[in-house]
Image (cartoon, rainbow, N blue to C red; front, side):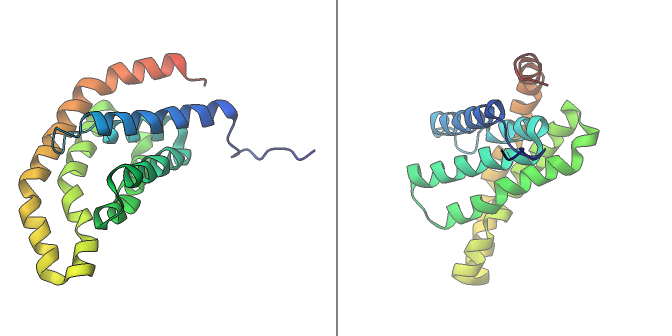
Length: 169
């Protein structure tokens, strides 16, 4: 019988990762009417803090589900690198973990979301399309930034407290 490697995913972890993915999808759909207000950033931070690089599985399921729900287009291509980038940022900053740090990270992520998503626009439509996408998206990126700051500031601590109680060490 083959022994599992230390990085192998246990059933409990896989279940928790699936629940995080389901929460991301459900809340993204439920909050779709609130333009650029979302809790996916917060859930991505939390799942990464608790499961490290395994959080990429939750993010991958979320990205695939978004494409299946809303259709696959240029915006979806950007999701394939923007959300995993947030996982990498959280992994890089994990040792300084503090609710205010994640509030700041979420705010900057909201501001950077539009410019990061403009890369496929630059490739498909050239400089004009890319810069047009960035400029026209500034108000939405500001809303995204403020929304992330408020939601992470208000929800990080209570959700983290719940997760520490229910997730295995």
